[in-house]
Length: 544
Image (cartoon, rainbow, N blue to C red; front, top):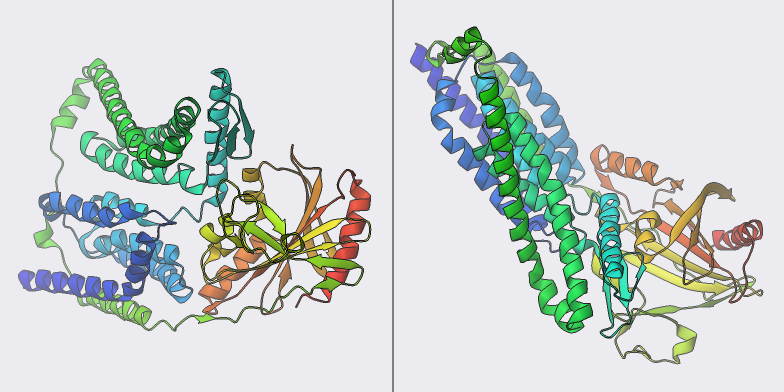
């Protein structure tokens, strides 16, 4: 009778896992595309599940010995994980699905085999967090890492006497070997942090015997990765300044990451050795403090006997319910992608003359030109590269289904208004807040404020830079359903709600207006705001 119950439990667990894998087929397919996306740079994601399975395989003997009674609370813990995965599946939000899947990897063993088995599964399950795409999600962290790397390199280069100038995340030198290096998002170091922390977590698991020591070594990986990326950026600048800029920005740039990564791994091993020696000294110092404590440590703790565990019809019914929920996840309705709002800037507005803009697609040039100045020329007058209506950064960073419409308007007083409408695609990364892009371009932001023009909310900030006079930037968001807001957080919350609950992907539009004074003039802030509000009233008739 007891063997029959054990076979029933194993069969129910296998069936539940099979239904769970079937329910997450969509997540697996989406993750494959994420791992192959060069913008995410998550090629290490393919190895993460393999290592998690390897850890479970090495613990197979201990897992058998830890088998205990099935837990009702383990079944209860599965429910919020399933709910989170359903929310992610309905809105094509792979991160929600992954969190639910990782939680189930711990809750299901708890439900069927007891808490001790679940504890053995904690590390392999949490290690799957390194498959979660974070590069496009942590854009607020990326900009600070870029500024840290470029700022540190700038200070050290100035200390060595190199004639360089820092503008945002760019470092420019006009010395004997002129060069221009921009620490873009791929060079921020965030990807190195993710890869190195994953490697450190695996290394700490097998080299450190306690969770505290593993956590200490894991924490060390973050500053090591940041330091390694700073050294890499600095070395590229030094090679460009003292040797050959083309070699530094070409061959050396492409392969210097491997050298720095090897150094970071060596530092990781050294940190692990230091932690081990410090902990061994501490343990030897307090080894003889109490004989009772020592004898208690030597006494083996009783282990649960899985042969006497009971798997009742009640637990079997709960397993069937889980299977039904997992199979229901496979029937998730297809997400509806809304049609984008129609946005087109007219050739002129009442009281304003219009002009088009074009951008050079060469990374070293990247100049902006007015269409009226080009006289039909399709190539950059400065370097001969191809011109496009979007900048090089917008064409390379933003998803391909993102649409951008730009135009410049001028008032009779010469005030210039650069208007841009970014029509988002299916991915949330289609729209970037100006607060994340402007610091990388060398702008300082101040005086944030909110106001309304004919019922439409706007958020305005004052921007300053060394090369350009002060200007004002205002932006607002709206979607195809007529929702208007100037809050980025509110837009994100509404987008998540529509994706997860309504199973609909809204097409949000971010409209930005960059106001600059005529050349040689400094417009006061109050007058600048009046000019901006007057222009926005003229623009209101064009917006949906």
